[in-house]
Length: 129
Picture 1 (cartoon, rainbow, N blue to C red):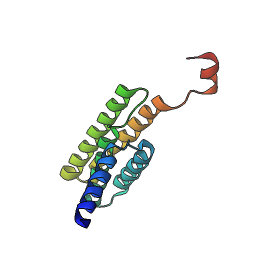
Picture 2: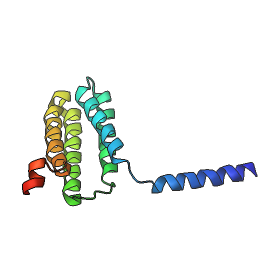
Picture 3: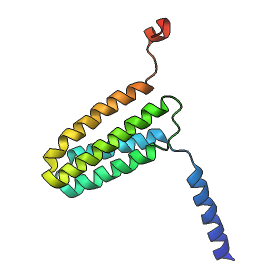
Picture 4: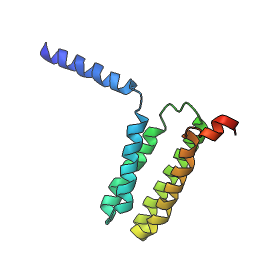
């Protein structure tokens, strides 16, 4: 009976976790940490671990509920994933230094697509765009 109860409890806790909405803010903080770890990596193993985690978190972020600018946000996430995969491939073939260029472009993409979600400034609210 205890085993049945534990299995029942486990099943429902797992199913409720699957339906839980993504905490995009926490996910983005973890993405930032994984990105910084990949930039700061001094060996290929730590770089691969960090960049794989970064890609995983990006894929997870694509499932978020974007209330505004959904298509542009998903486009940006796809571009960042592509750059991260490119950096990983370059690191495997040419070493860590070769991966620095795609990693820099990731930061530029981050800035560009984060601007979509910034609240309007005072003058924009007052006079419109």
